[in-house]
Image 1 (cartoon, helix red, strand yellow):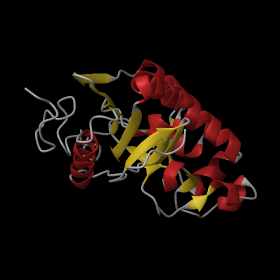
Image 2: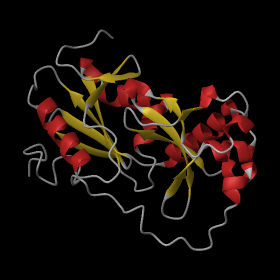
Image 3: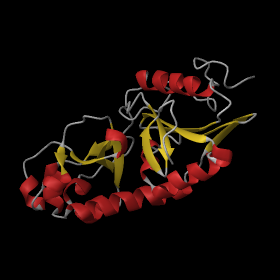
Image 4: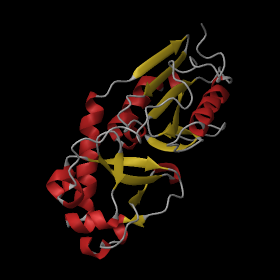
Length: 239
């Protein structure tokens, strides 16, 4: 079976099926304590950065003069992400997550830098043990992260991950394409100069997955250039 035959084929990219992701809204929520929403030591171990679509509204973390200045603000706290995406911060719960708001920041009474450091430390620790799936067909190669834990797309925020993808997929001058269609999927592929059909197939899959997802991030295809995530163009960006 040719896994790159059709973007509509469930086996196109590592057996992934557009829109197929575990539900994060209807899972049971046994024994939840509200402590993480009020207590920083409890929240610090459960906080992760999550990618959100471009234009997502919220309260910029750097706009807070003090943690207490966010009291009463129920909007999510956000940071600018790569390629115009937005980074929010999620408290991991049993089966779903709660986006951290200004009210949470005020209750925790910690500066923005402390919040970011904890969230990214947790993401890095999770990512270090999270597996990658690999699909190879001739010179075509795809790596994907689809663990079901909910932090897969956010892995692209980690320098260790961009370095890994660049090394694993950029051999021989191949361009490294990246898809972030939904919270549960990070997709990366090697675009060879003599394989012009690969990029449209990759783009079709990313778009179909995002359109079928309840937690879509972006329909675009990105590229890693010098370790940075930029929108993909058919014209190669300078390295």
